[in-house]
Length: 402
Image (cartoon, rainbow, N blue to C red; front, side, top):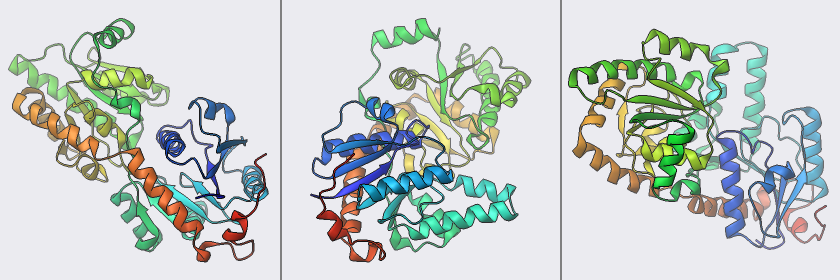
């Protein structure tokens, strides 16, 4: 796409989930597209952390709260000044109105609106819903990260299916560096004192992640394993957010009698997380709601058996490679963990299926589809802002990137 300028909002690049998406989209565009001019609007320091990008990538500083009126006006001013042909908003942004060019949006999930619907039935709940509906309806194209998310958008906001395209997430390439080495295993033994068999959970520690029931299922599993005289030193390792805002998890551990067998490690770097994935006996992910659900796929890339939920997007993501459970049934979760832990032929079958399933998703495949959509939108006269210059006219400009 020569002479085209595409702005990408990268202000949420440091966030869990959305940040992973932004980093991988930008990195992959940097490998695949050396012609289009990309304007990355956000923190230059965060862009530097991604490493070198080609000369057709430029960063324009913009900090401050994303949804403030001042930040919105500053974003719009940048897009207008640089005469961008298209803006990619890689998350559900509430007010991308009055932009001087078309925009596309990525929607990761509808959790915010489902939970708000339960909490806010008054003015503010309705106001936020209407803003989001307007933003989605104004988008030239919507990228949904799963078929499940696409259907949610259609149902909640009445968006025509033809305007929503499923473009899957994929795992970070750093999870594809093979199995853990002896040095990797030694590192987690020395730094984290992990020298025992363990089940693993990695992800946010928030109510919809269902971590409380997972701890209760682990407690029941320990009781069953005592009867089998198996895995007496099995632990549950939880990697994710700081627990200071989740005291109920500590209480659940104490109430369930597994305070010596559950470890909360907080955040760990990807280079260390991949070793935990590789060494885990089972990766457990009993989430109640996921727009896509990357952690099970990350575990599968290491051949680790996965037990996850049979709801939302998770069956779509894991295919036939995982054992699916009803996430609200503690004993169903426990029975699945018990079976996968002790049934070696099942473990081998899950390992082979996991490799095949993880290989179905790639950032290159997804970004090539996004690039096609960029070209379709920019090339369509129907999507040009009728109050501003046409896309063709903007493509012929030679305005520099300041």
